Length: 579
Image 1: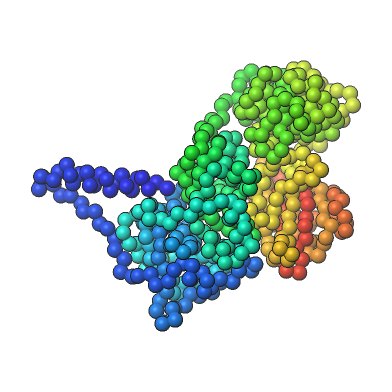
Image 2: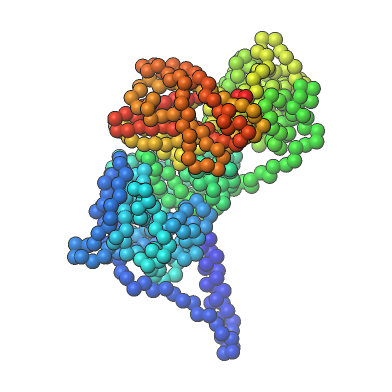
């Protein structure tokens, strides 16, 4: 949180005064300690209790006066920093009772309202309410809690004293305790927005996955896990400065804001490198140049594993390497080198048969006959063999990999093999949400709790549902792809498979969607074929024409809508855009 920069500046001023104490000719700038002229008369928890209306439906109301007619004044320490951009246009204020977000339409707030500094605010006349269940103070913005102009905040807020990190209330807790508060409205209200400390925890995907998704919109969700296997979501803005920072490995202690969205907790870091202690940090690997001897993707000269890692791209390419293991679950760093517990859905290819470092490998999704011919589940004797596989170079498990595979050949060159389908003739421009994909790189709209990537009987799918706690919740939310380059395409059409057993508002409030790169508004796309109700059978949605977007860069996605009258479960997989 860069508090050390401020303290160093104070130390330098003090040191200069000591070293030049006998030099009366030197003009020494004084250290000015701000002093507030207003006193807090209401705790943050008292303010919350007065206006709390639960988390089921968002609300907005004006903060009045005290029982004696005085303006309501709260005070507390700043426990956030917007310097790295993950906490944006807001500060988090915490006293000895609770914490709350204060929204301010400005940046670089950390310069004037520093971490650990006491701030007192006259909140009478401001608005208080919730957005997706998170209580905040601000002004009206389209019927929701928005950021007040900086000059408005400056007229109401006063800084008192210098930053004092030691004076920040400490709340050491556990993931299991935090999760239990979700069913207790008093505890949920109290713990919202607190700076909490969690000990002996680890990052799921630590050492191999970044905090965010560089170049993507909105937020990325990761997870923190304790020794008992309990998990807590981590939300990171894909626009913050540490978006490409690898999460650390091992076990340690984290300090983070306990935020809330939809129906679940999510941790928010100001600066992970300061907020996380005891872990092992791994340098983010630099992308090397594609090796000159890395092949060209043809059957005669297939790409090497090193070439794929270095950025080789394209559809319908051959890649060669040695089978060294597989990924058994959702996370790349859980790779197994060997055949114990092997599955047929994927393999790891390496530059040599004796590699046991996952960072030197690429994951390959096996489809159709390749599963039973190449997969280690049926053929453990394939371990260590060199194989050349035909497919599309895409991200898989968040890493450079090979997907949509269809043909293989043993050895260092490509070629057709009996009992395997011919190479597809359709030009696949983009594919995602494959049922063999353990993870996806789609954005799920700040992790509302509506969208999730699920698995059933070994097959994965995108799941959306706003039904929880035996009640339907009204919400509109999107899940969407990274930017897709169609600049070389002359035409485009999209297909996917979906299922929905219970249908009330599905066909009226849900849809496919598309927007051009850089746009904020979505264009809804009619879905030609909906699944039959009363069944979880997947059906093809039919072809959706995207020719209007040929020659452009776009994002595609799905809009999920629900109401208190109905919140259906929608399952989606196997999306493709072809020319």
